[in-house]
Length: 290
Image (cartoon, rainbow, N blue to C red; front, side, top):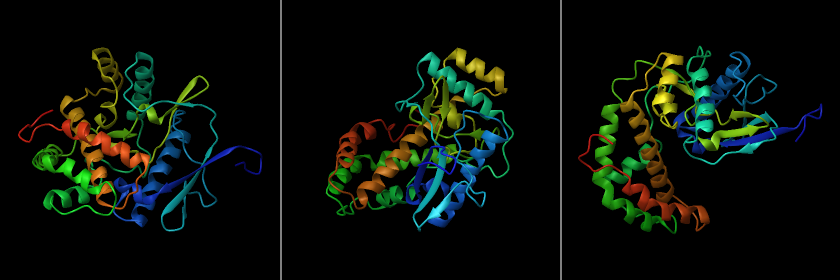
């Protein structure tokens, strides 16, 4: 679409039912989304972080507006560029570009209203715990429910142990926090001409820097450069904690997906095929480390 000046725009519709890290109900999630996207706008315009892709302000100044009960609409300047595949930044050029972004982000003064994500959050936790409490309850709201439950069932003890370990490892909260993106992986990078930008700022929040850093290939040289620039030495235990959070989050959302209504489509089938490898990557029930 274009605005009255002929400028090309890009419109997004955020499904509030898929953003449980922002709250427990649609109204709370909508407010959390406003806070996150407003933070992105402040990072771009006030802190002058040009790699931040932020929405335009609506007529009332907000970065997003509600569309019905379930959705929120945001409008962005149109970017002509190339997206990147999901994954760690393992190449030296990609890694260094992302590391430069994170150094700038982690050393900026937090804008007023920046969301707090100081404790790692496992998504769809309620669904995951409901399954672990009653693993024999049938999943019959979709065609793959019972097949998926049969794959999850042998890992009940592992999952209980990992959640317990995860909860203990997140206490106390980190002593060092910074503005973090939350998901600075390849899928959220775009090359626009010679410039690389970072998109999808609905996960932005104050948290341990390791929330971002675990997604970067931190060899000795990269770790030294980050530490010299920020004054913070990445903590290997916290890096491992966020790696585990990602896995548990994926598992929680897949439990939620297969317990509920789903169709016989390619996404459901692909997730069903991916489940065995995902579950096999869990540490053993008695393990306290990765």
